[in-house]
Length: 115
Length: 113
View (tube, rainbow over the protein chains, first blue to last red):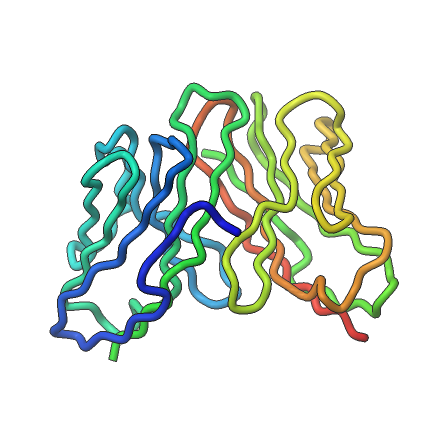
């Protein structure tokens, strides 16, 4: 079982809705990530937080808004999404830079469908 | 920037056949290498990882991988596959002590009973 938990597992939302995806980890990791994955494709990095600060934003549209309230929690706020945003959204965590042999651990993902 | 390439996009094998999936990385410095598996409808799970030491790494479910520095390769192997190994397999790398992870495009493995 993964130690990164994500809720909800499935979400269907309209293009005018506002919703949030939530992620929690208790491994003491100080780096947390959001990835987007389409079917049979590799995960695409969206955001990286290190020590609760946004360190990488891979030119993600502003309709996706990340938030890291504390070292264990990571949210992804969704607003005015498009049908092409339908995908599996994966949260992950790892040690931050400076740890040799850093490993990234993934949650089970949130399946998002935009209608 | 680093890159990871997986040349086998879709592999179909019969049960009990041997498996080798190719993975090449581009970074010339200290590198960490990973294989992840994603079963249908499930999340990415770590199969095995290499940081240093013995270049032959053993992972879960009977998988192993060999790091060959001279070839920039980290191929995944299993002597005898099972139907339950049907999944997507992703190779990934990161630099030394970094937390930037680079994924290959994945290999879809179908094992026929």
